Length: 471
Picture 1 (spheres, rainbow, N blue to C red):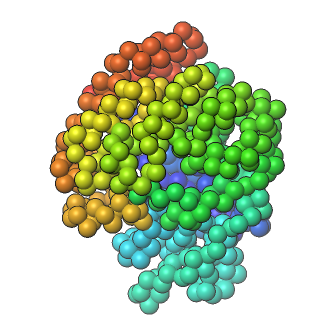
Picture 2: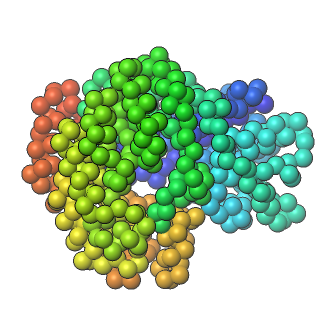
Picture 3: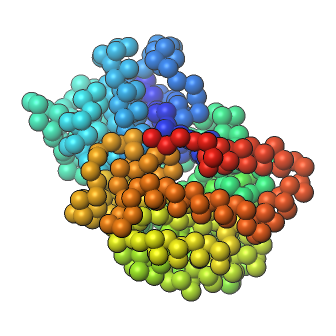
């Protein structure tokens, strides 16, 4: 039985054209299925050309029996369109949907998207394998944990699977199923791209933090589970043997377990790999950042989110303005690219004065690169429930749940959606013409090999700010 795991086309604007990452989640699932006697391939329609004719040709050539489609909320409609196209090609092909959206609202997803035969909820390996085995062997699927389906015109949501505690037991994601030539751009913006062949790596799953805007707990569990340092280093060695020389760690907080993290750092240094990561401003100090620099770290991304202490508290970030300033001071001093993520409209009580504090902190910490989005109250997050209580979510159009490219159908108690968009564009534009960013950009231009990437980045950024029409 042949299986195709698919990432559907994305609603993508200019800003994200150079920020597409490999679907390592699918590579994990494929490796697990193939280790259990299935033949699994990956089609990534975020980077591959897509049309119903292309899909039909691929299905026929690979003799596909099952299609698994992953989706976040902004792409759930595209995922269902793909499932619908599959049913038109061959109604006997089984369609399975997984990912954050269906995990958060399984009953609603089954009712809203009838071309999904089954849903795999939360962590997918065990549930997807068992479902595929029972479908192949024509065995009952009713008791399989971690799946949902329609039976007798009613939604059936089975009990969840237990989280995989021993992450070392999983095979490494099968990167051989990905066409690296389709991921030519360095998605870690701000890093010199010349000579880099990057890949994505996860060293943990789950999160114990309580941020109101994040759905990780819904998809990966309410506590952090770690791979051993030895297991991570073994995957790093495999990556190097495959020709990769830069690693983007996608863990939410890579430094959460300091002792394990230090062992990974030493492994990176020994392998002479460069890397970048995300972490929390409260989880770094001078000694740790110095070690990171010494072991090849080129960039650290921090979730700052707001410059308003009031909003940080309402978001349950559990960080202070002083910690934010200190983390960026240390990162700049170490010569590591400092990246910051911010969110506008992140709570119904946010005001123009709170946004002014966010712009002020941007000016003070001087991130080399930053991302400024407008809140997306994804299903499964606390902010989704909060905004519903405030009556702010008036239009459930999943295509609008896109924090960079849509005019959202919500605002705050004090600010309209259009005001949030205006603030976003103004802050971006003012910062791009700040002396710090101009200096950072000009320094990058001193390397002739960087000019093509910098020109592309500038083109897409200007297109995003000046010409992209938001719907």
